[in-house]
Length: 572
Image (spheres, helix red, strand yellow):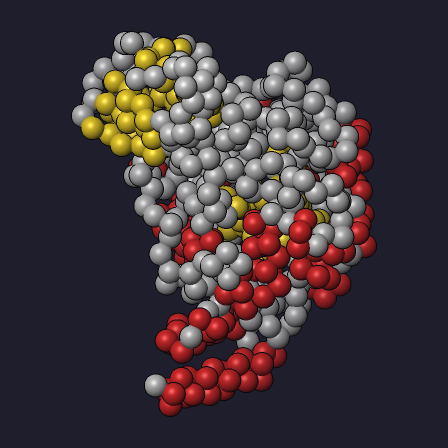
């Protein structure tokens, strides 16, 4: 045994020497791929070998930066520097800049660059949520925050993504004229910068199909190109930027340096979506993961580091750039700062959430080191995830936080709803600011993958319509199920429900299980904030660990699902 371990260590050292000696002639992607293979071959010699491939990603040329890699461009499926070498960007996205403006500061950006090893920041500017650019927000203030973010990123030798963060608006065409005016102004102002990328529609959703997105892009891209002929432009894809396969089948033509967004949340999105990304890349589609998290797609559920590390390994293998959600102290799992921390820079270990600690370790040392933060499986992806998805779906996304603060019903937040006020200090007590659509960067009104690209957005299917509610008593729990949206796809009727669970007993409950009857056969295509089981014409939902406790007379919201086929039956 000692001899085999010694031999493995020797082989590892030789492999590392080869990597560094050959760094001048190997591309970053080639180094990463070689190292990943070496790590796999030697996996038996100890967990210290985990993550060799990702730990050395970027070796040879050093971390890509505007000062060394210059203005970026796209060749085939790869992001390239002006020196003709592949570039991988890895960094952090802000939360909504209207709500957490103080995190846009040069000291924070400097720390992410010099201490964490990030080389890109993303400035997320919401469009339709409370205080959004197109929903009553202070446009001048928001543009000035973007300007400040670009200025700080430039000073710290970082690339920066200006993100038109559509979410509750669903279809980017909703505020197309605002988008065109905004990008005309920004691209003119930053035309001379070599570090600015433009993300023109964060997460199209709610039945928006690729043809609608493509039509929007074909109007916005020329506006940017009128001022900046070469800047990289990132286009969102259907279903909260998951259906990159549709873009691969029908890419935008007539323009260079176009990339396509894919978003994932590691505890929800696993092999299926990862395989979809790889297939799109293999078809030649340049993919950029402009948003991801290591928790579930609600942004506030459990963390799955093993799945996250598998994603990191795959993205490193294919040279895909990735940006983590989110820089804030919001009381949700995806926030990288502890909710109790008031710091806006100079973050120490005690200021970081579990997501923040993982992110810092991953950026500094590769996924192998990150995997050790909370005892995750090895970074080469051989460890198992925390468990199968009980809903049977891989594309499940949540439209709300699990705090029970927001009701998760789609539609813009109004001025008086749920205390959704602009917090000028950038802090969050856990029941303010964040609308139900922004809790994890993703929401739910999606169709199943096998029926992607056919959603008409119709609300005529079935006998119920958006806003209709049904009340069902299941034991001591009264369920109010509200229809968020209805549509038809491929001849099938889909319904998106959000639920409120009320404890009608005189005693608190520590866990709840409810059974919901349906009018006929149905198929569960998506679900969140519960464990779901289908049996005949009934759906059983059991609470998660974080939302099982309901005091007497209290309630829990933000539980929901999407079904194809029958509707919920009336009954008490």
